[in-house]
Image (cartoon, rainbow, N blue to C red; front, side):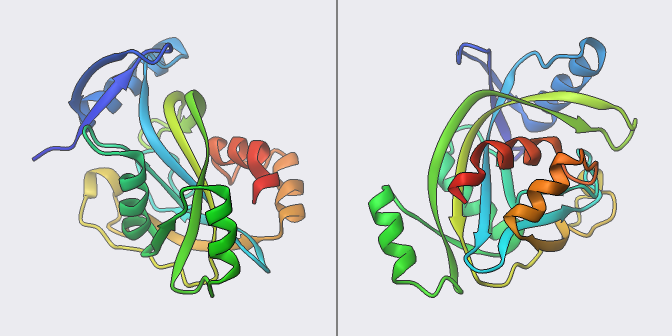
Length: 218
């Protein structure tokens, strides 16, 4: 069964539900023609840091959006009928093979990270929600940039464990069978700050925005 996505207008009104492929193709097509996205799709983004080493980034595989650019470790669309929290946990396993423990409050989060080795799972809490977040995406097939709007549930957390990557056979999405990502780097916060100030084109626009807005929480 095909994955279904809800899509919303700028005021947060539900416009409809269609297959993921239909929704994203229409969003990209209209954006390439007009320069603006006609609606927003619900997603989750996770920013992850290593307590001693810095901020995790992963290099995307040859995906249809932003191929081979460096990005946040976990991000994904929320399927119709799915919650943002369950999407986060699912995507953590699918994208970086990492279990996620979600704290329900700042107090619980601080207690968990102070009493955990952080090597077997990431400890995460939700930090924000942006209902009309925009970021330009590089289209693999045309080489053009297009504006994608998302209803973005933003999470941040800490982890000391190993990040792994899952291979895939979805040739249409990935084009190389390598999976969600092909590499990982950890940057000290100050070094990443300098790189992004230099308008470095090796990072995705949404990661630049997220790091700029939430780096003090990492």
